[in-house]
Length: 217
Image (cartoon, rainbow, N blue to C red):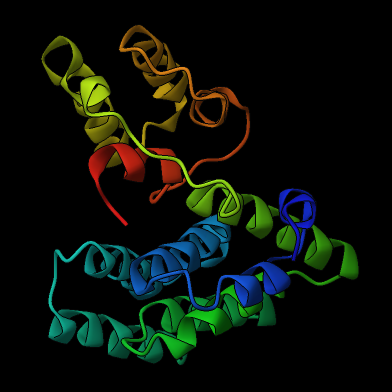
């Protein structure tokens, strides 16, 4: 895959193939969870939603492997629940189960199945395009690695870091343009970082700029 192909790709499958040896388990699980959140309205059993939330916490090291496995078991039980009444809901419940599976190999299945929750080719294409957008948000441009200058992080008593932490914890991605302004005041002139913070569209937990500023990988 070339840089131009990466930037314009609307299908996560070749992107994930390209990232096979670069994308760690945390990013991959957060990607699967972000795909689940995009079909949240179809996850009608609380156990399925709890499984996605547990998977996110596990990705961040906040719960144990045993905790994740319990959530996965409950998500599996939700598949037989009376609330799962038609194929769309059933497929969504399967996606949540895959996202909470302790085995990394199931995460790609979560992404693939999430795209197929709809009922038409148009819905499939739309969901794939959305997933590609989410992957761009999580990974950025792998052809142009970006680094952080320590002076940005130290500026104004750590304002940039405090903003990034609040955005991350609260999922307040609407504040990214404010973060861009703070970064500029701190001396950042990196067009990729500033542009990503100011671009419209969906951002998710694991956004590459926030991770970069917080030292996450």
